[in-house]
Image 1 (tube, rainbow, N blue to C red):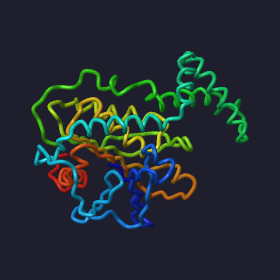
Image 2 (spheres, rainbow, N blue to C red):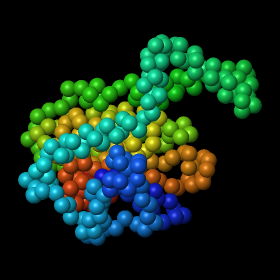
Image 3 (spheres, helix red, strand yellow):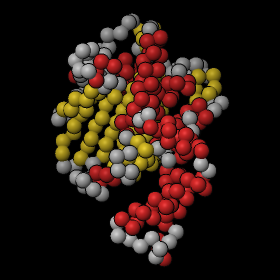
Length: 305
């Protein structure tokens, strides 16, 4: 249920599909880890799309699950399988974070905020010296402390959980139509170079007897963005958090960002935009529901603002 598209003015669209390979194909694949296949052709249209489901190619785009109980959103009757898939994905997301992170979190809790800022400030002075600067000159005298406080803010998402963010803002409501919140600004740090990537997040879901406060969707995106991230994981974590908190019939998340690690250094492509998507439930099983979501994002539906 994941798709990555990298667009650049000087190159053609490249699609990256993530799928689970058949058992026994590789040692890493034995545990269900994802493998990536890159193609250099644009993503096909809805009528001719090719999808990957559990490692099998379905060239017609039709889902081979059991007969649906909801013709509009094509919800599979095997809801337990959807729940198990969501739990597995959430577990996979947590495994991606190195085990050393647990020790780092424990060390962080053992220090006060003032102690952490002092330790980071000392490290910043060392960095300034290593690049040939004088950390004691007027313009840089307070820079280490400013930098430490700024980095603490950039990464404050580590101090929160999805349950804390959602809190009690889940309400019973007999609404079974799509809910979409578009253009949520996000600012994050690439974990590979610790430089920013910024962009927008779009979240859509189909309620299953419960709706969530609209601002909470934006806060979920903010919480996961305020960590050291890769965009692919950020997209998946937001989708899994919505599934975990309100158990909807389906969730779709799209993130569009510009990465300064590609702009200020490396290939230095200022116009490159990276788009990632993650879909769950009826958005994954029903092409029409998925198409409706993307049509809203791409402007093929009425807009009032």
